[in-house]
Image (cartoon, rainbow over all chains, first blue to last red; front, side):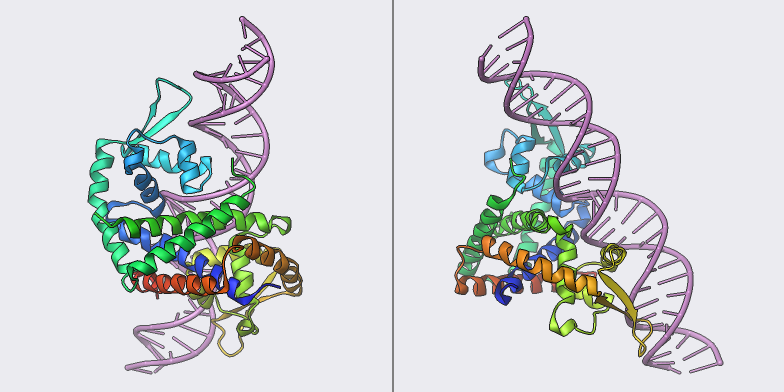
Length: 151
Length: 151
DNA sequence: AAATTTATGTCAATGTATTGATTGTTTTTC
DNA sequence: GAAAAACAATCAATACATTGACATAAATTT
């Protein structure tokens, strides 16, 4: 069998992840942005992603498959929120960037995301948040190491 | 905007949830059991679920929609791992129970789950696990409260 | 007894998630 | 210059995830 404590931990992780997907989408439903699209736009909104990110970079960063990311990008591209630019230096790479419209949308949803964070973490101290993030990071790294299909 | 610490926390939660779905399925791929099916079988394997669980109970417990649960149950039912029994006391309710085959399968995958837990949590102390579970529980409860569509 | 509520199921539309296979392009290596 | 490796797109099959709508049956309320 397995120990009860670890089982509880993983059950709560699973349950909380389900809630995040559902309630996260509700927080951005006014802009018709899903939790997954939010994560992609968030990744592209970082300073370090100023010049765009390749699809592979996004896969690594978000821990998702190429085919999955591709679908999310298609839906974002159809709405003119991102573009797939070709890199003149290496034309195999597509550099995914936000469009003007994507940047504008991000500034619109950022406060909604902030409100969501505040409400979801309302009884968490700064120390709690740091410790929690650290645990998530550690567990995530362990599982990433275990992934047989990681490149 | 939003604060960087909360953003990191939610990003890690999202990333870790993606890894769980992927690596969890890999851990049980020899028995062709997905992470979702595992969560349902796990729920039904608890002592408190000895007499079965209703679909509504499963929805609440796993934080998933009825339609979604229904699909997972259909797939488990096709493989004779669970049955939908009617309760003579209240014939609206379907009491979901594991079959003999389902119980046998669970005893087969339980050690695989144990190995998965051990490896994923290998550098976590007992105190870490307790604190981590507590954080997940708290965040999950907050998001559950925020859910507009909860019954 | 009639109306309402509750529990479940199913269909539909949409979006996410996986692996595997195939195709094409470009860059690197030889 | 040709072969090999890397990157990306796409198709297929399967499974999971949401909401909304509609149907059925049974229990509860009025």
